[in-house]
Length: 111
Length: 115
Image 1: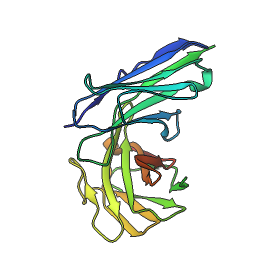
Image 2: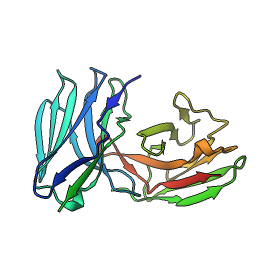
Image 3: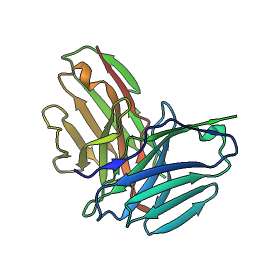
């Protein structure tokens, strides 16, 4: 069973702070890593993808991947109340084209 | 980007009955996926539906309980059969994004409550 683990939270941060969300995965052969955002009552939407070790930045979002340690993280700079949502980590196991999702981390950004 | 619609958006059903969920995509796609998201749980893949072939079910899901149709490249249905309260969940269809391999667009979901 390929597993993707996330702390369910909630993670509470003040507006303007950096939110750090973490994810670990079990399959060393995984090659593709994604972060989805899911607002309450809505479906998930992709916000970041990363395929190689290191950092990938897109606006206020930075995804970090460390394959040796089997973790992937998402940093949200200058957090806004509108960032309050559940963030799902997804990892595509080796030999598959379908991602496995973690349970998600609930983020609350308070004014 | 693909536009995906689902019907119904929500429903309340009695145990022992069946519900068919429809998923419509505004463009032709090779694969469509059906997920379940139970409260506080991750997205769990039920099956992958390719047009013109039998759906491929994940471990723990069977065709008798979740029959799937895929009559063409823009449409699929998932039926939740002989429902029990444990089937209460959000059911999501998705398609993969041809421009970004292995990532998926999700439909708005169907919120099902079984009494």
